[in-house]
Length: 239
Image (cartoon, rainbow, N blue to C red; front, side, top):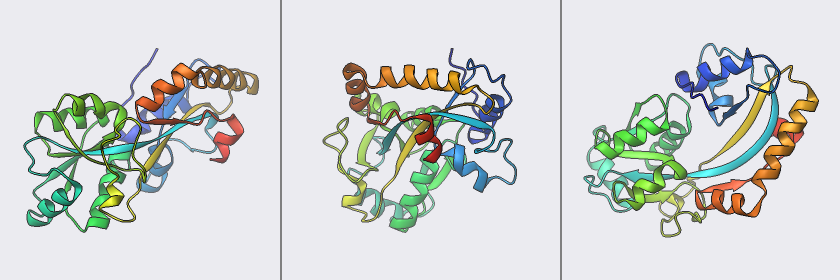
């Protein structure tokens, strides 16, 4: 059963898992904010090292820079020129402070010397929905959640955040082709409460890894913009 505990860039959900019974029945999947929140909030309700037992470093993935069709930009260069001509008037969607869209968007602002203003939402999906509706003009969101709307012409893809083209979006160039030095890829890990017995952590890892490394599953993940890692608990902890 998946329970989305959104809010505070994942702090609410991670606190719930840190305090859950260490029996293997409550685990969490998280990404960049698991670590970055400790640097961006004055107080975080968990200790990333001491409150969790790493289960697996699942995968890594790039994001994709998109605009609403009403935005007159058909390339990364167009968007940079537009943002410089209209400083502070374009908005992009974030999923909370220090989340993947926020970091990717601010890296773009930093390197392009633009001022596209972040509007924070309670998760990546609401940010994408706001872009589809035209509430905001720009998104830098995960390929997997954005690709259906790119294919449906409801969002226009300008560039991927990796240094190479994505298998999922082969016709979309890297942002770095226009903006040298730009690179943003994120990661996904599964963790359990710290006191979860090692035997349970090992069992979870073995079953998850077994599924993720099957050819059909790996192919499906690749087509959605993910690179499978499926590492051991110790490799996840080191990462």
